[in-house]
Amino acid sequence: MGSCSPQLPLICLSDQTLKPGSSKWVKVRSDVRKALEDYGCFEAKIDQVSMELQGSVLKAMQELFALPTEAKQRNVCPKPFAGYFSHNGLSESFGIKDANILEKAHEFTQQLWPEGNKSIKMIQLYAEKLAELDMMVRRLILESYGIEYFIDEHLNSTYYRMRLMKYIARPDNDITAAVGANVDNGANDNADGDANVNDDGASIGVKVNVDVGDDVNDNDSVNIGVGVDINVETNVNGDLDAEANGDATAWVVGAVSGNASVGAKEANVDAELGLPSHTDKSLSGIIYQHQIDGLEVKTKEGKWIRVKPAPNTVIVIAGDALCALMNGRIPSPYHRVRVTERKKTRYAAALFSYPKEGYIIDSPKELVDEKHPRAFKPFDFVDLFNFYHTEAGRRAPSTLQAFCGVSAGK
Ligand SMILES: O=C(O)CCC(=O)C(=O)O
Ligand SMILES: [Fe+2]
Image (cartoon, rainbow, N blue to C red; front, side):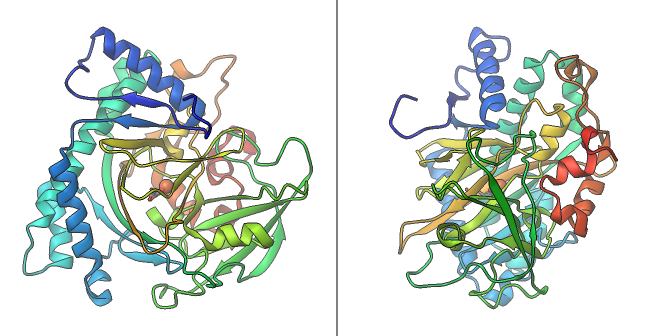
């Protein structure tokens, strides 16, 4: 903190000194809770993943993305878009379910490298380390609210999915944004009910929904919104501080639609987005940016924080499922990826935790009190996923709120 540009809180989660029950653990626990309540995310300094392993994963990613498109497209998953796909010609990604478990991760090897490849071992080891870290964070969170009894049940009700991502900056003079139809008006709320309208002026929400077909990878120039729902507001205050809000449903489930922006500057920003503004649907996510920055996280005040990559530092980010589980006390922040360095390729890896199918997400009673009335009805995450695919789910300013918000009046 204290530098001129805003930054996320930085918390040291290094293994060496952080032992459950120690005074450091207790301090870190309250820091984690505060950071998540304030920002829905934080930067974590870690030593669980060696530089050597980070380098090996980067090499594996470079190798993977260099494969021919037909090979990459073999990374399919029963859930649409949970496998390989590309967005807007600016990013592409692979999905690996249960990447932290070697036997399961081998399915990915079989899809991509039927003749076998040693890289998967590195990716799996990396996912395993990040999963350990993630479980520690979720343990710290639940302890910080005094619900230790719930830790085992919670951790056993989840699984992991890894995304490996490659981004490039938009080439100059490339016009990619603002294609579409279905214009309608709408105002946006993010998951914690914090309306994304500037306090000091009126806003008009303008949504342009772009629906494209299943074959999303071939046409780089018109794929705005593929796999994402972007709800964009154009602010009429004259400060041109446009908001682009949405959910990258398809990063997890694959809605093939988007709401692209209209307007000058915001169309420009949109066109630069390797990943449009969204909240994650997961419980938690751990993101590692390999050297090149691009990730931007939106604060409750509506400011974008650009997160600089630093060695041995990851971003811990809360998703909608955690927001719901924690009775809205931890928001799932909007974030986006904008690569501005031309001629540089950005690689990022993220490990997400999700509730298992059939598990009912219901805030523990300790999180509900007069100051925090129950915000969400209990739900199965799969039903939330399915709701994202519906017209109503895609159009909702906050899918989580529309699906199970108590105030949604459903
Ligand atoms: O590439 C990144 O830094 C973030 C990726 C992300 O937000 C996502 O996959 O949901
Ligand atoms: Fe995300």
